[in-house]
Amino acid sequence: MSYLILVRHGQSTWNLENRFTGWVDVDLTENGKLEAKKAGELIKKLNIQINYYYSSLQLRANHTLTIIQKSINDEKNFVRSWKLNERHYGGLTGLNKVEMSKKLGEEKVHQFRRSWDLRPDPLNRSSEFHPLNIDTYKSMSNKEIPDTESLKDTYDRVISFYNSDIKNKIKKGNILISAHGNSIRALCKYLFNLGEKQISKLEIPTGNPLLVEINEKEKINSCNYLDQDRAKDLLIF
Image 1 (cartoon, rainbow, N blue to C red):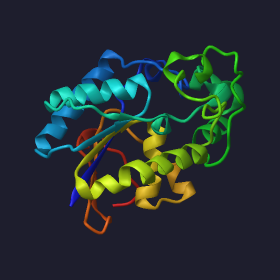
Image 2: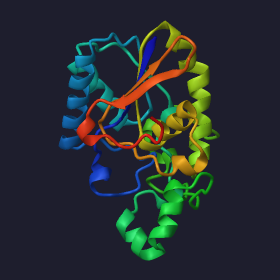
Image 3: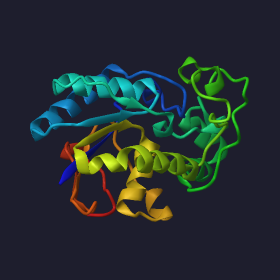
């Protein structure tokens, strides 16, 4: 039996401002740092050894993970991959969600946010918010950097990385992944065999570790949030 722990980063500065963030590389708020610290304290209470750590290329997920590692006194190196990045919101990037709901209508914005295969309009490559113009992604080839993504696009890259780099480690030890709302949503769709309509309803709270117990046959025995006061419906158990 092994454990897979999924943690969405703590509250970011653009979460607080209610902006579409995507690949823009913002940091945690003070509240986000506290959420990450509490996540670490909850994980420490499990009294299990984490053998492998993974995160995206993005600062808010990396910072969350380093705070968690400090809390559990295990600051080993972790693997970073762009394939665990948040979904790229294309032309919506940087815009306020409430203002866009007023402008386009709540239903249209909800479609952009939660539909399975609808992509927002591409983000102009000259925009300061485009990954091509953000130092974090300078090591990536231009072909790898998207202009916009659907949830399906995000799912495809996340699950590709999970199957190639993470899945084979599960039998060898316990794994913690610090990532983002949509990359974790994609993993949950795969792990829990959720349908396209179900995944649109799945909410992933910031800074609340999701503990998944996986048996020797790679089947899920149980799944629960460690902070029950902030838990969301997983649509399965």
